[in-house]
Image (cartoon, rainbow, N blue to C red; front, side, top):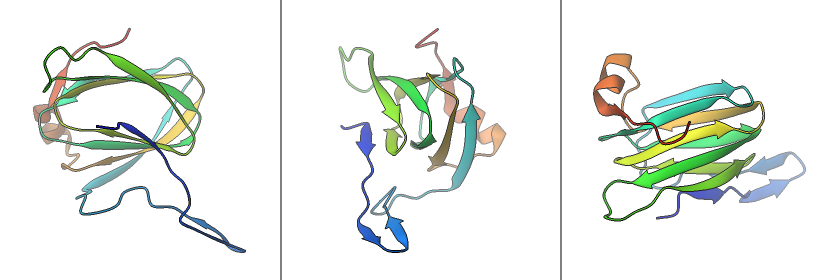
Length: 128
């Protein structure tokens, strides 16, 4: 599975550009705008059911992940920059270390109600 995808416009004209962040039948139930300061760490957990998408509007982060569904899968990391979208499927430990002050959109497939979110979340330290 490809976790990070560079978003490219599908239409450009004198007014500007249009790009698909998600395609197909992805059920998005919540969209959050999140800011993070350089050096901040977010996530360090996995979700039992929820799939998350993070679209980087501004900044840069190291995104670390480990697939729990596959045996012998080691921790991997990639650099995510403006214009990249990251898909985090269920049962994937993930963590984000921000290399610059950053702004991103988080889109989720499950409700973001805090009580339901916490029930679906298992905290594991992937990065310090």
